[in-house]
Length: 427
Image (cartoon, rainbow, N blue to C red; front, side, top):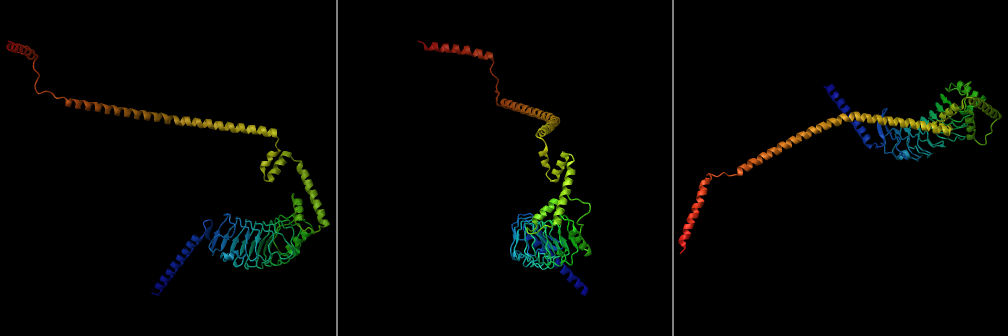
């Protein structure tokens, strides 16, 4: 008996929990804005308002959302206590990439204590205050790639819990010894696609837990400094891609190094070794260009234009006379094709439309004949009816007319009687 009641109690509890779950989902759908998509992802409440031309973070999404994606919009700034004022304090992951964010006020993330992942890539950030993220005590991953960050001496960020930092494609030319001293828990660092010529090992010595670093696509000078950096990374068992590959030539290396120098501090003095290295790279590029000039001029010009990604510029190198001839030929081909298609289309119409017109004409003729027959029959019936009605109107006499002889004999007899009467009346 006790097992029966226990079974009934568990069943009731299951039904109530299921009803509550469905009710919560329905409420979340009702409160979700029409320009957003709300769902349950990986057991978390998520809302995606991507590409809606939003100018601020006010989206009216449910306040208990944990994953919020408002990327690819027109947000220009993050104001102080903005997320707290909207009740978005349960955020676990926040995606703000590809907006127009240029300023982040201090304490902009106040109250968002559960935030773990923050994506601010490809915005208009030029400088971040070191204490910008001090209100996110559990932040683990920060993505800042695609922002032209200005790096100054001193701590770049103060995030003791940060483990993943992406500052690739930020056009950084130099890091200082104390830039990373306030992010000691960092495990992965992405510094690729920047303008780094060299970097001292002291920059990374404060990262005691670093396991992976990405240094690709930087114009490294590949001198003693680069070899020292590689040796230090190997010694500390840090994963990295080879900085200077033997026998490889980067044709754009000199230009990238010169552009990197422009980003450095104006007071920085370039050493003689670096200048010699620059000139040697310049000579290598010059020799490579001379070898390329031996190729066919037209083929080289076409390849360069295609490499730049603008294929339409290839027509700028064609003489006007040949352009005119090519235009005529293209016009003749297009015109002939159009005429052939029109002729073909007319032939198809004739072959398909003729049987239809003949059949239709025959059907119309048969209908006309049937209608004429019907009308003739109707007229004949009307004439017959009128004839019978006229015959009914004529009344035949009951007695036959007198004979002609009787009529002739009667007339003289009347005349003789009339003469006798006149004789009697005369004196």
